[in-house]
Image (cartoon, rainbow, N blue to C red; front, side, top):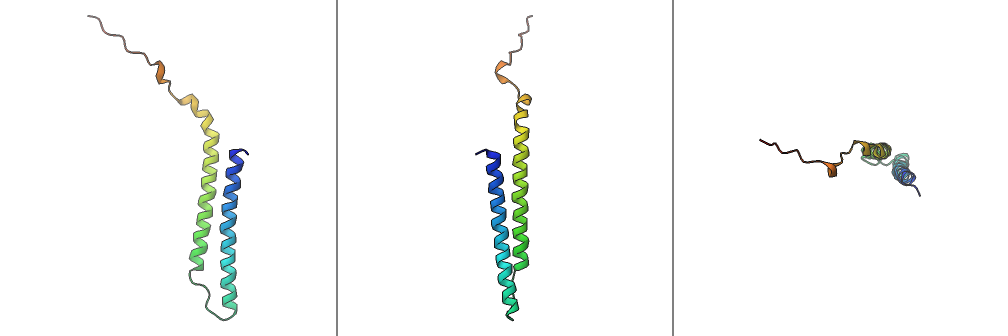
Length: 92
């Protein structure tokens, strides 16, 4: 499997797992509220946290993809330090 596809599949799987967890917790909170109980505390903070993590995962996947595209072209910028010649000694 190609590394780019593996990274994309893993990042999509992580985002999907977090979003399914968020939907499950929200469903529990709505069911508790419909029965007349108090809804779960911290649901909005939990939802914001999950969405923030999903955004970070997506940004990191995009960063690594962009880095992978730029990296092959960075070889032209490297200096070859093995062929550095010594300066000629001054004769007086």
